[in-house]
Image (cartoon, rainbow, N blue to C red; front, side):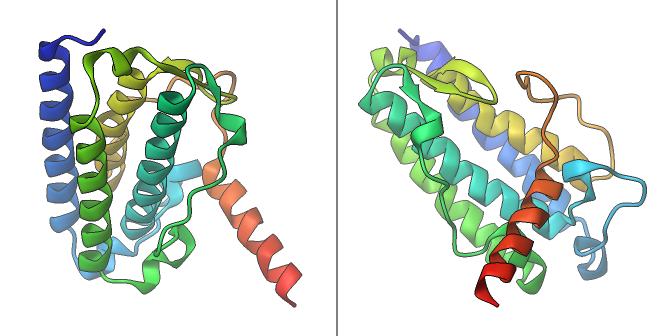
Length: 189
């Protein structure tokens, strides 16, 4: 069971890391928001706007994973479908920073409502991911602020002090996404 202190800390860190992310984004010029970092790999190759799109997608996905754990303790997340958002990462550079920040704001409002509706016992329910293994709802929710911290550092052009704990090697999400988009375009033609 999560303690009141753990829940308060979760909410505080979630707010602080999102504020730091927004500050990092707001410090960039329009040109810098669309600049692809040189010599970067994986997610670090995304522009700042693409990273915001990625964060929207992942926030919605993390919420779906938490809901799956709440519905069934030990839920297999391989069965949870991909969560679509209005501005997918591959379209992020076609949008303004304000549009993406508004999308993030709406996603976070949903997440905060989800957190506020949980009983202390609900934080101990689990979901199993093929990429991350078995995590409690509290651990999934902590991923939100850690993910923000990781991408705020990337947006600011520095190495993050946080790296997700993947089972095995970290997947190259950028390459996987480009391949998915190419595949979608092939099937439409």
